[in-house]
Length: 106
Image (cartoon, rainbow, N blue to C red; front, top):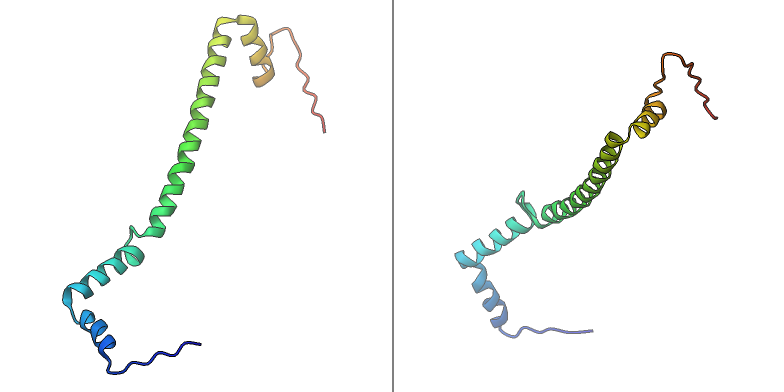
């Protein structure tokens, strides 16, 4: 247990002196405004930073996927048999003389 005794109030007067200063009050108000109230406050900046990191990860994922798709496309365009197989499997295409049956597994 601590007991504080202020004998003549000199300490209180010392701190109260700063609260009457316009520049101190304005600076304190400005800091509080910028940290908590402004639209670009610390919490908003943190959220935006995490969103940017997430979007950069998505960008990397889609760039890798794009490279894979371009490689697959180049392979399909260079090989007619592979292109026909792809069309039959993916888009259920068939020749004029063929019948097509789709078996759906449950």
